[in-house]
Length: 242
Image 1 (cartoon, rainbow, N blue to C red):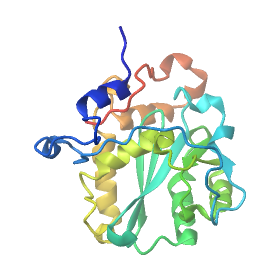
Image 2 (spheres, rainbow, N blue to C red):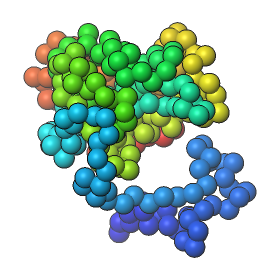
Image 3 (cartoon, rainbow, N blue to C red):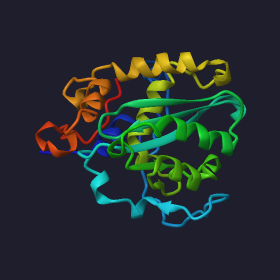
């Protein structure tokens, strides 16, 4: 017998208002009392504002989906109060390896593009195959980013964060270090490197209790792409949240 995760959530969250009892909320890691079920986004429901010539996630190669091929990244921003500070987050889908992008001033699209390129351009070509992002205006210069990392960039459907599920999960873990009420601009590059090191050296059940750093280092070994026996087995469809 099998049951979907949505059915389990409906059993936990009362159906009349979709909220947990108040005394249970402090026990949640996210502190999120409301449950918003996933709904299929309508294609082209919203236009891409300020993003020229975007590539839709619907055009992304099917080989990205099973996570067996390394080098496919997901990205996003975590945002401070009143959108006054930001940290860029990049996560490799197969290894869950995290790179944090230091954005000390504002969400300037030009500076942001240069920072993302600087974070990924030194990786070997097989570790920068694609990048998937949401429809944020920080990606106004996505063509420059794509040229800098020599990889295509795909954009998610509107209101569809699960299309970047690995990145969304990672952002949730990062909020343990960077609460939503905190000014993110006060964190130095060294602070970000420390947090990324913490996440990348945390064993994950989905990686058979290896760490993202171990798996990502394996991807960088000579001859890895030609050795299918060394690829990570991703039989679990869910993301690790602990």
